[in-house]
Amino acid sequence: MEHPEVERFKLWPSLMDRKAFTSIVDPDVDIDHILPKQADEGFVNKSVLAHEYLKDAIRKHVIFGGVFDEHQFEMIFEALKNGLAIVSIELEGGDDPQTIFETLNSRGVELSPGDLMRNFIFQRAKGMGQLGGSLHVDKLYEQHWLPLDRPFWTQVASRGRQSSARLDWLLTDHFSMNIGSLVSIENLYDSYRRWILSERPFPSVVPELEAISASAEVEERLFEQHKDDPLGDFGRFTHAFEVSTVMPLVLYLATEADLRERLLDALSVLKSYILRRDICRLTTKNYNKLFVGIVPKLRETPSDQVEVLIANLSERGSDIDRWPDDEEWHTAWMDDNQYSGARRNRLNYLFEIIEEKLRNDRNEDIEIKLALTIEHIMPQKWKET
Image (cartoon, rainbow, N blue to C red; front, side):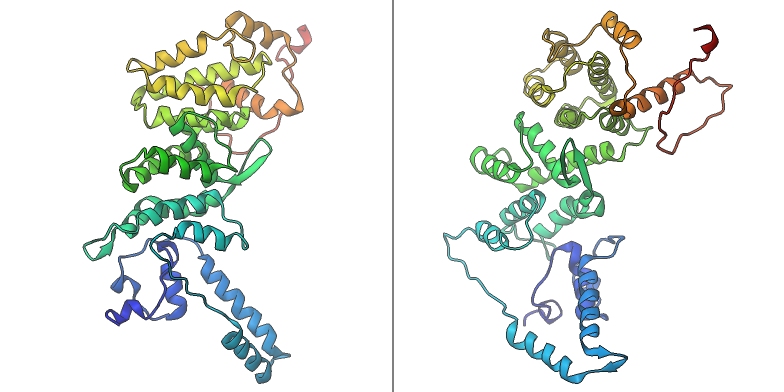
């Protein structure tokens, strides 16, 4: 071996798993000495959990009543020695390793769109050579995709009747924003792969990964829903009003449009449009096409994009996409029954905003941390009504 410290491990997992993998094989190994320092994941690695599970399963199989059964242990050893097959696949010049990878995994645990896209991107980056003794691809992974391997992005989020990992929703929104068209999460990988190979929108995988990282920074704030952050508060708003279809447009406004201090104005425009239509009980069925369809129009406009956004939403006259005026909104707010079980999250959001606007310097600053529910609404002067 040319480099025994490294090559004795035979196989290197991705950066997320390397420290755990080497500590299982050799607890005394100094991985930071032989490889670039690994990021501290801050959680128990799945390979560690798998190793602990396997050890526990073996213990249960060979120890009965506190007594070790050597015969059972020998049977396990023989099974692993003779029954475990390791396959080496050597590719020729015309073979596509990504296609072979997908085929081999098709009979096991189904790969998510995020898994497929990650492998597709880094498979194309494998020939980028080294930088300071380290692989370029490892540096790219550590900078751009390692943050997306955190548990935050594997958490399941629901949109309508669909549930998937946050990472899959991020990549769907990111791709929809880029092409200005609808993308289903089921067809995400196939559509993205065709787009990259046919359109070649990026000169290399570096700007491709940089674009995904920029979208991830925005969408993480939308998912975290911090009230003091304009994007976080908009995430609270979209969750309450169930309008995740606006996310590709928000990604564009927060990244490519580069609105800076005017981003809050653009988000306020979208809030007004969605809120007014909701109070007036107008349909949301056209939102998926409407919002993503605005992105190409904004890209084509070099002028003030906030004003273009306002003009685009204002010029619509059909019930499926018009922006209600003050009179229509006031009439609906005062006369229509807004309180029902399905609308409680929306009313919670609205009443909390109204409460905050009614406070002054003499009021105690109380932060509502729990998800309160609306049980009854009592007018302050109920005896006079």
